[in-house]
Length: 477
Image 1 (tube, rainbow, N blue to C red):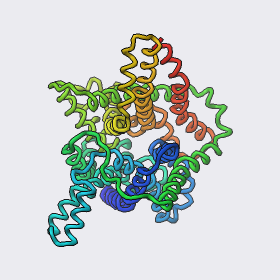
Image 2 (tube, rainbow, N blue to C red):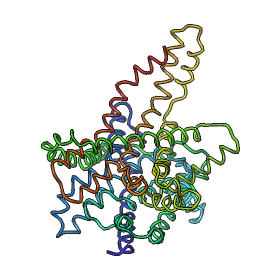
Image 3 (tube, one colour):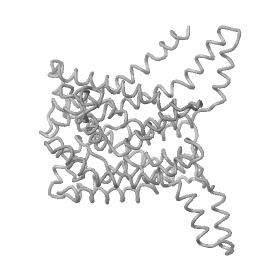
């Protein structure tokens, strides 16, 4: 299949995901508004599960199933489209919940509808109200869901689904000249920029960088609750239970050789180090730019640079890698081409939009009153009250950012496209090595390597969860 045909297939696939997924995200988000307590926390945990799933494991788990459908490509395509749909809906829900509010409220739209029934306003006026109200609130989730479906790579490669990312990646690593790769990438990148343009207009013209969505009207029924829990069960099954059951079931006899595989452990540690470094740089920077109040020329220049990195990161890791490859081959900077710096810069661009979304969610969801009271306790004349105030400040203000940074490091560790194209020749990350081995079929040793590789972030986060409280008590003594 040619690149143009693969690009058209991806375009149709992304539009189908938008047409089906945006209404689903809208109705599920309306149900979340009316939930409180532990059902709300459980629902949010289930919604975010597909965003945490490693796509390489998902594709590897369904590889045999796709091979059984090799004579039925339509069914394989439909199953892949379902995976894209289920994986894109959480992004729509998050953006509907936390995106900047539309300038026209739901009450204004209702009044316009009443005025239209009495013929007091024209159709043109009502269309303008709708375009600045409900339609505007749906632009960010629709565009981001399209981008996720359009630029997906790992699952498509494992399931043998034709798409432009697989075609271009295989051509680039197969020896295609860089300038030819950039020329081929111009068409899909242009489509992505067209999809991003209305989103950038909405966010740059909003009154605040982060604000709660203003479209939360209507009462949710038990029927809507049933659909919500059904979606959560389906997403957990497709992205976690079934793939990991297949991988774990075929890995029992493959763990013993791994203890002598020094290459695997060095790759894992190298990937963890780079992911921690990228997350530790990008997250505090985005957090400072969103929550910082001082205005200065250096900060304005940094905001412009971060916005450029966010736009570049939204174009996908493949486009980011090609752009940085061409940049680091320029005469001024070619000396650092074979260093970890291009890899780190690529991860920074990849993480920038994700960090902006995570920090925005934390800032919006944070309650300011407890933090203000905790700060008052830190100024107390009693040492016990000062220590309690510091503990409350850490738990309410800094612990959410700690977990947000851990999430960002996890995303950086799971990325394989940027590592494959920008990492030094001697630095092969574990996901890249596994991706190369997966094309030769499944085996117990390979499945065990997959389990060890993608369980390391879980172990790291578990250790962080167990030891952050003693560390805080030691620091606040």
